[in-house]
Image (tube, rainbow, N blue to C red):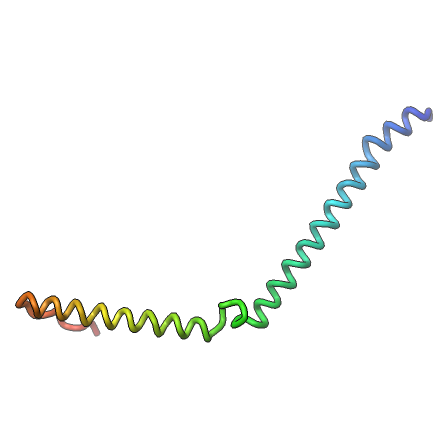
Length: 89
């Protein structure tokens, strides 16, 4: 084989394979980092705002808002001289 052919083979195959290997290695490190963070979020959900503490507060706020809205709708119906609809089961 001549030197030209060897250089062409290196340029066309070996160098792109090295670049591809570096890219894959970098991608695997990024995936590993993301996986560690997701596992940490799974182990300590309250630190990331996904835990039961945060959800309990949101549910309490939503319940309070629904009760207030129900009160004002009933008040408006009585104020207009109509009877409010019966409550749902």
